[in-house]
Image (cartoon, rainbow, N blue to C red; front, top):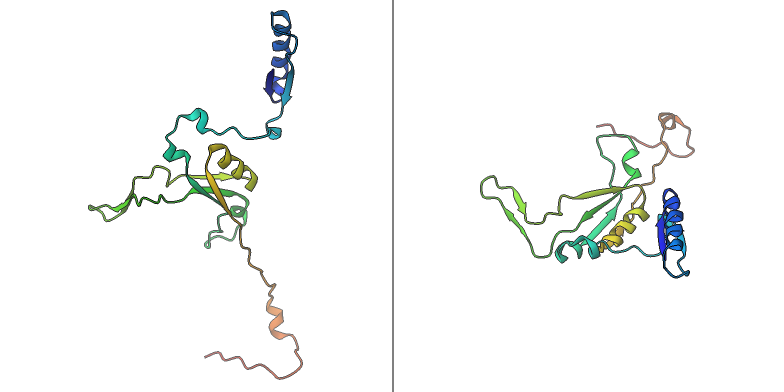
Length: 163
């Protein structure tokens, strides 16, 4: 069975099936074109990467980063971020020269950005990492206007202390 991913490889699949039919292979060879989004289960990358198990068995956090308080733009909210949790062994120490905190974890500064939460989850599962998702907490913004300071409200006049 020949499995080809994507449209651009359809021509290769047809060529391969013609070659198979010309060879001495049994006639049960089937060509199947599969789009990457329709694959059933992600193949874990640890199977072919050769990375040590200390890197493949990690826990990652998937979240949406908060806005920079110094900026008013909303574009920072559109991405999802994946970063690694700290190791349990306590591989951190204080650098004696400068007093900075040092770590032996090579994955601690790694941050990956994704356009959707599903992409980040799929990537973490494909890498073999356990993950948890922190859903964003949005604040309710009440509409305010300067003119509401002068609107008539029945009842007692509110006292506003300025000093």
